Length: 159
Image (cartoon, rainbow, N blue to C red; front, side):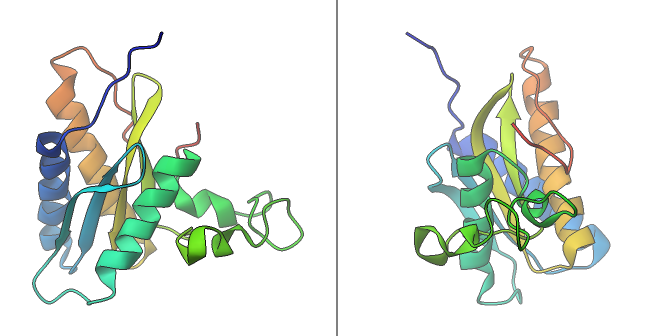
């Protein structure tokens, strides 16, 4: 039997708060979604004035990152991005009723080598979404670091 770590609402809220702080700092209106390992939202927040399409997009990115255990932009990173035309997963973005996101802004949450959820962001350009996503992961790393847990806090994650 395997013991597993579970992401809880308090940690998810901490991550969203850090992403929103970063968004304010860089002057972008973001929607942030943190999901559990099954891809279901724990916390979803749309900043005042952010696009109304943001919640679904952020959830899709978080869902994809958690479920496929990789940063969403890696699907389309040349030359070997699996979702690029001619590669093995071309068309995967039409899976799960179009919920599978293959562009920048989704990051798996990896603690002690295990994917326990995902964070997705929508509202900025790729660089801005990445900055806010990494800020969320860094906040979780700081929160859990005192417990001796290792959290990956970087843009390119593939498990």
